[in-house]
Amino acid sequence: MATALTIEHFPSPNEGPRAEGKPVDMLILHYTGMQTEERALRWLCDPESAVSSHYFVFEDGRIARLVDEDRRAWHAGKSFWAGETDINSRSIGIEIANPGHEFGYRDFPDVQIDAVVALCGDIVRRRRIPAERVLAHSDVAPARKEDPGERFPWPRLHEAGIGLWVPPAAIVPGPFLQIGDHGAGVGALKQRFRQYGYGLGEDSQFDDGTDAVVVAFQRHFRPAKVDGIADVSTIDTLDRLIAALPARP
Image (cartoon, rainbow, N blue to C red; front, side, top):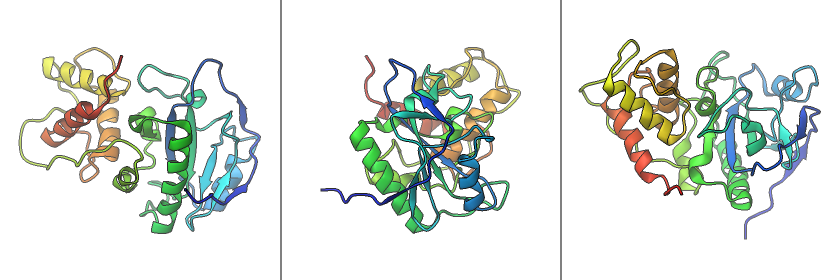
């Protein structure tokens, strides 16, 4: 039997009703991206910020609830995944204290990740959230967001039964696609990203939006090299993730 989580309460006013008819079937992970966790927590509870999350995980492993799970927290912003644009209504959002790329991005402490694993495990079991719908904020908003970033240990979550993961393919010399390219190869690449869930158009241009998606994918699934270039390693890793998806009706 799982040990009950100890959760503090810091109610945020930045919440509302979930849209009717939309199941809660996504879990979105963020980093706070502010100089201190105290400032981040205050911001998420400040009515002037108009942002919030359901949970907040401190660097020392403490967990706080800001918004009840049955309510809609304002954490995802303008976002998209697998045809859905109201990510806030379909998801639970967790903010993980870390200064982020702007303020000295650093590794997440083990005690903090232990708490994240325990919290996520509890949520995905209760909510029956599919592994492939445990996502980074950057996955659902690649043009705007970088979090929780390439230092976040997704494999540790996967080992605990949380999230979809395959070992990234080795980085080797070979053909690649990059911004400015166009043609059938780019069109096929974008189709594969759409198949996984990312929001990309059906054209055959490797544009800024494509570059943002490749970077987001690399941050999550091939973090050893985040450069926006769709190389052999990136494409092979994507293909193996698609193969690991459950059959869709």
